[in-house]
Length: 376
Length: 75
Image 1 (tube, chains in turn green, purple):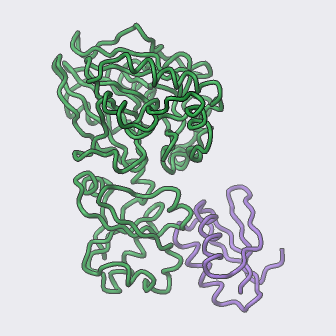
Image 2: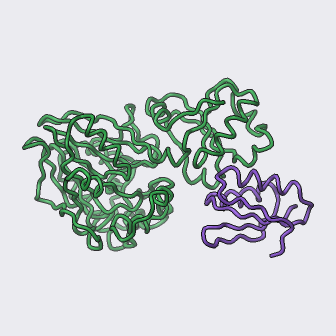
Image 3: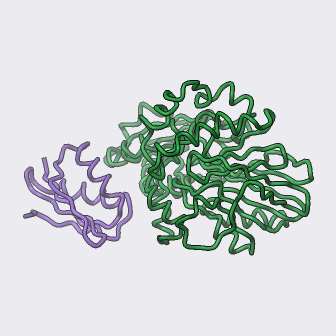
């Protein structure tokens, strides 16, 4: 029997920039659409059905003495192939337990820094899907921003640290993943905030996330300042945390910018997006650290596995912020966009409370990369 | 559609639908048609990709009440 590897172990390897060799045995269309990536990750694809008679097709491509992580959609085929590889003389073929489905759900917490008012800020990196959520804690209280569906992860994190989740925020109505914000607030007895302009069709109660209404986490310690910043959605709202961090949601990423088309209104929202990126954000402090809700490229992961950048640096480097001409900008954010995220219409309906799919269906809906940026 | 043989792969998880399909096809003659019933959602893309890769012809596929059906002609 081969020794399996968990998503957690694999995530640590990638975050620590260890050399990682992957054999992905899903069919090539699925592989091309979405695969495991990282700075020091080498991945090859050979569908399992080409390896049923023997693993010869991959013999020459992989070193028998190296650790090879075998990956498929749910972990069944890769388990079989890892065993066959062992029989064929591979010394360390390891099945990724639960496959891409489990990989998509793994959240890796990374500490970003201490807060001036006393407290800490963590980024939860959903490495398989490129989603980022945030955990702010101060004086026994916590707030979670853009929580994923796997709310037990934040619950146990809060429990370990002895803090109470008082607030959850969604910077906008998400189209790429199912939000855990409402459920997490309900279970913790906290308040769920959503921008009102994104909530016109929601079927549940929420608190309106509004510019001008600051929220404090931990007595008077940490100030959360909402900043109306439409463009990816009409309600998109950024959060300034502790005068140090700018949580940009899906408006501004490290290497790209948000796409305006996922609610079917690209033409309407282009001007909002431009105004937010080229005017509103420009008025903010250069030294704010930008913390987005997604990333698309392995290169966006920093050495410690976190994703962040100084606002002033992005005005120098991010391609989406260098477009002087408005017409060129309009073209960039409305034409030649990547495919939309998997099941994005049903994901939006789920986040509005209009439909409540079974958990297995929710997992299926979230398959694939986030695809919220205009590139990547 | 007329089929030479029917393979019931319902309730089986990946990779078994493909493993059984491959075995059943090997036991047929060229031109015979294998009908496969499966419930694993992934089998749709996998059987499509496997027929392309192995050279057999996927004549038709349907989905009714969560049961996926495939008709494959052996090459």
